Amino acid sequence: ETGVTQTPRHLVMGMTNKKSLKCEQHLGHNAMYWYKQSAKKPLELMFVYNFKEQTENNSVPSRFSPECPNSSHLFLHLHTLQPEDSALYLCASSRLGGRGPRRTEAFFGQGTRLTVV
Amino acid sequence: AQTVTQSQPEMSVQEAETVTLSCTYDTSESDYYLFWYKQPPSRQMILVIRQEAYKQQNATENRFSVNFQKAAKSFSLKISDSQLGDAAMYFCAYRKGRTYMDSNYQLIWGAGTKLIIKP
Picture 1: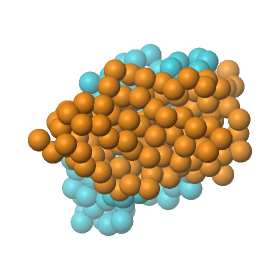
Picture 2: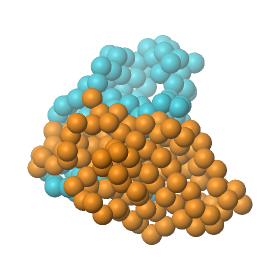
Picture 3: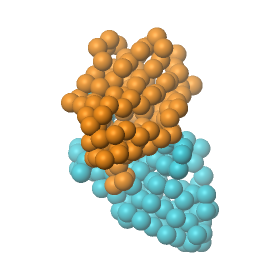
Picture 4: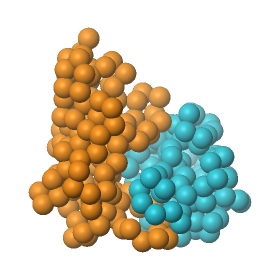
């Protein structure tokens, strides 16, 4: 356990459904991230939140909508997804403001395996 | 733009032997960090080892060590005395900067190498 918890672990949804992924961290970190991991491709950074404010949106389609109500919780709201959105969605957190790699190391959750049918 | 390349989609090694996973990267930065992450079937991404670019000494963590060649932009991972629990996907990652307050934590990732351990 790294201190980052994601739910659900698995999710199957139809293209017309609306669902949400949840991420929670109790590490005292102030930055949280959503990554998409597809087979045989590098991880893709989707969204970054620093101190609850979104600072990055890497050209992610609007059918993915993030929400960060506080520094411990992060959501990814999903609606009208496409089959190509099927992937492993990973949440990570880190502490900004430290110096060096150890102080800003990212900790990951176990991911949500999403299948869009 | 920075890129990270892992040229070995899959590697296999006999238990107790040594294996080296390759990683090359491209950057114009002089200060950056490199990481190896492990992702077992449980899917949790776990940090294995880190290297600061300004340090010439290769990082080591128990059975894991790196061969960092800054001029060649190469960052290979050596696993000694391989164990069955080492079986996983291994990802090489790059992060730039030594700024005090990074605005984000943009890791640039390789596509991964699947490591198989033969008993």
